[in-house]
Image (cartoon, one colour):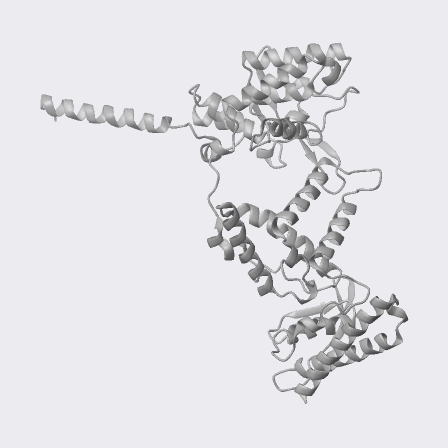
Length: 482
């Protein structure tokens, strides 16, 4: 009886595909073809019958399929043999999901016969990505006249780039409804091997975790939200990044690989000097340039630069009081200044003080003069023409990205300047580890682990102390002292 049902299912699916092709060739709309619709109804009935024969308890009784309230929605729900829950917005959709689950394990059912039977939708990986991408863009506030924030633009660009890098043409054509967790894992393994073969290098662990999987999560997240298929990727028990460690480069970049070196800093500074000499093109007060230079000589975080006020500058004591930062509300995208630093984690405790070197003083004095010439009156050190604070997210960060791209640097963030300041300025100057940590606003452990690379003074210090100690012992031995 079961074999007869399987045969009917496959033959009906083939008939639907054949009839569908005929309709397309004749230019007839699917909804107008009575025969096709009849075949679809028969197929739906057969699939339901197939599910009911397989979806049973150990004693052979049918498993319960019912409507319930789940996360505020009325859904159809049942449980699989392993006890896990399966839900769908409609009864028909739940039967479709159950059919795929049981059919994929049935050697007498070829799922290829059932792909692309829906006349009104395209369920390919590519099609779902496009829909998910469009939905993401809409959530970011993109319209015909508004392009959204810099952050959202960067996020969408990243999705495009990651899709192009990790999703090949064959996989893009796959019907997402019929892909199972093992199919995804197999594809990931094949892709990681292919990229390694093409480049000679393993994909970075972080790139796989934050980029490859991000595209998959976007696609399957949309499919799950719109009840197209079951949630595969977000289930960590089925899809762990660590499962692919052997095919990934799990080494962490050293501090020197994440920092601008002295030559790169000088190239950027020289370019800034040229731009400052072109007020007609870059304005009388080239704020981005001054922001870079202040970061170079203070190691301030990007958010701290944006919220810095003139009242925080003490020229007589030669100090800068860093006790605020600029943050973005990721729901409203509003940029605000808050009265605490990153290290304080929302609990203001006075911030920290940074010493002002002669270079720092010269930068700030020159900036003040240029603001006066430009008619800028503001309490903020870095301000727009109307006196409002500059959103570093939309201006300074973009400036760093553009100028780094101009010179072909592999890094383009303010964090690279902070590491430079620590390791190319403070360390060679002999500033102690505790003081370096205080100036940069983090712990000694973080400073030594993530910000320091030319720091070998602890070896020198140990060497001197141990050598001196040994020398003292040897002298005592020579003199016969106890």
